[in-house]
Every structure is written in structure tokens, then in C-alpha cells.
Image (cartoon, rainbow, N blue to C red):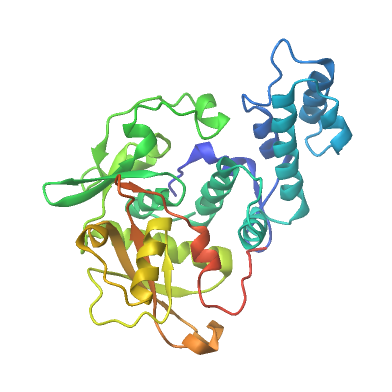
Length: 335
């Protein structure tokens, strides 16, 4: 079995009886290794003491008054965010349940970075045992911004942070601990180099062909199918489409903010100009294996999924829309 995405920390977690990921002390300690949380030399005694106590017991109760006693205002804010998120992790049986709760209620003050990390590690769990490297590469869209480029008639998506020169901070401290390179050359994923993906999966240095009718969109469809099955416990079939012809949108899900705007316009019968339609990167038709889970008003009707690029050719997929946007009766997290 191939391993991948070591930097998400999945090897530090346990699995519950239902297959969901359960928090361990080692996983919590990774957050304490973040640069924002390691006390600098000039940190006050309260901050240094608190950090040391949590390294010894990462489940230690930390009160608002404990954080208020920290001298530095920036440090106080960082600790407030971390402890609120840690407490959220500890309130639920699994990380999957944490994610469901966050996206149902709204992420509030939870840093987007933390939400992306949850998606990363939950998706690693959902894809465990997958042998098709293209599916795993496609799944990177769930938690990594992509820059899209048309090259020789093909729509290629490459990791924005990687093509941007690795200027951003690593997604997790594990990236640094693993000694991964800050910059890497980009290769276009193809049948000849597919097997090299496993050893380089944490480098995000393979571009994916998202041209309509090709394997990249089929791989993304499979990644979405597995995500829905794992997080919601609902079996679906997802087919990539090359275009929508004379189709009534009984229900649709925009997989990003721009796609939602396009879907809203189609829903309202508005004219979509060529520029907007050219930014559609993927169209999919989703059907439920068991129609009884659907809302009555659309029971038996297909659901259309739309993926789009921003005007500056970025793809910022929102996997939470697959959790909150489908017309199903009950949302059940993996437990």
C-alpha cells in the first residue's frame, strides 16, 4: 500500500471503530511546534511556563485568565486561537465530526489554515488504500490553491504555492521536520510519471490536466465521491461532463465562490457571457445510489457540480460545499 501526504500528520492519529480519526497527544503537540506558539527569547514567564506545561500535557485546561496573563498582545491572540481550536478537537470523537460541526455552524474565528489542515488529514483518511495516484493528486484541489494555465490547448492546474516559489510558510511544522525542499520543478502528471507521485506527494510539484474529457476531471470526480462517502456516509456517483446542454438545474453546488456565482446566474436564467463560461474548469453530474436520502422536492433528480477559476486563473475549491450543499436529509459524520 502506498503512503502519501506525510506532512498532514495522519500517522500521529488513531482510528476509531467507525473509521474516523481520533486525536492523540502527539498530534496536538504538532500545533505547539508552530512558530507562532514557540515562545521567543523575550517572551514573558507566563507564556514560557504555559507552553512547557502544554508540551507535557497537551490536553491541559487553559482558562481565559491564563491567556490574559500573557504580556504580549500578539501572543495572547495566537494562544486564544490555538486553545479554542484545540478545545474544539477535544469536544468531538473524531476529526471528521469536528469538521462537520465547523462547516455546519460556520468556522467563526477558526483560522483558515487550521480548517485546511483538517481537510488535508481527513482526506488522507478517506483516500487510504487508493492505488490511482491521479486521484490523490486531484484531491490536492481540496486544500491547496491551484493556478490554472492553458498550454497547447490543455487546461493545466499547478500548485500556486509551489509555482510561486515557495514564498509562503509551510502548511504544517511537519513539512520542515521532514526536510522537504522549499522549491521544486513542476512536472505535468501523466501515465509515464504517475508512480513517482507517491514519493513526492508532499512537494506538490506535479501539474494536473483538467481538460474536459480527460482523466484529470474523472480523478477529481472519484476524489469527491470518496470524500462524500467518508464524511457524510452517503454513496454517490459523479460523472464529469464536457458541457451543459438544455439542462434544468434542479439542484447545483458551486465548488468555489466563482462557480457559485455562475450557478446562481444559470439558476436565475441570466445570460452567461463567454468570459465567465471560459472560467468553468469542471462540470459534473452527481446522482445518489439511494434516492431515499434526498430531499423530497428533488428526489431522483441529478445534482450538478461546478468548478471555476477566478478572473486571475486561480482555483480555490471549497470542499465544505460538498458537505453542506447537497440535497440530503441527514448529514452524518464518520464516528
